[in-house]
Image 1 (cartoon, protein in one colour):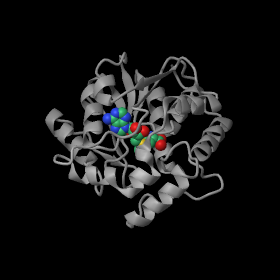
Image 2 (spheres, rainbow, N blue to C red):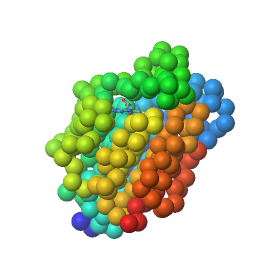
Image 3 (spheres, protein in one colour):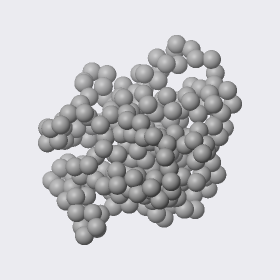
Image 4 (cartoon, rainbow, N blue to C red):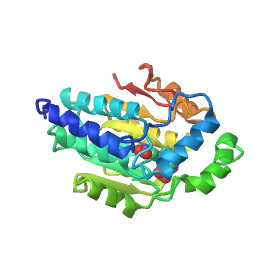
Length: 259
Ligand SMILES: C[S@@+](CC[C@H](N)C(=O)[O-])C[C@H]1O[C@@H](n2cnc3c(N)ncnc32)[C@H](O)[C@@H]1O
């Protein structure tokens, strides 16, 4: 379906929505490109976790997500949108809202999460991730990023975005994604942080991604505490994916499937 002609009010609505979801109407967001990890984590906990944000994506990543949605709608790239790893649901609420704005009523948004937080990484295979999983920040402050399904559904409802075009996949990706009733995808946004969470999403979903679709990897540059980059590099090498990775900010990159 072609996009509705862009109206200024549509952009205004989506801009306001991004600011509300990220709690940046009255407060500045932490700088995701800064080198001081300790300071960044402190700011991050305060702003997103304790501040009540609905998404922990920086605005630059929302801008990129919006551009990707516009592109797949404008170019008629078939398929639904998915995020694997949703926390409080903000990025998927935005996906649903942007589809509405672009007059696109035939695509669904898939919301995939354990809804009980991160899986515990194997310390032998993934020592850096296991250390982060056990850290004070993760246990005392982030509660392993656990947010229940009912809370996420309530967030969708609060923004007027809970309907039959939003589908929830509750459970570990390795269990839910292989048999998920998704035929085609136009955007897969991976935000499960860890090696296996990233690899499970890629191996189970990439063949369902249309040519012209996007793979967005939220944690590609999070080398201090995840092996997300390695999962992506391993997958791309194994599958001969040569499309260039495009940087959004220090942690996040994406590629557009060309064949
Ligand atoms: C960083 S948060 C996602 C942030 C979110 N995209 C946003 O907009 O704020 C990571 C999420 O991934 C989920 N997760 C990570 N690995 C998972 C797995 N293997 N199976 C299911 N959920 C997983 C966690 O429960 C958590 O909600």
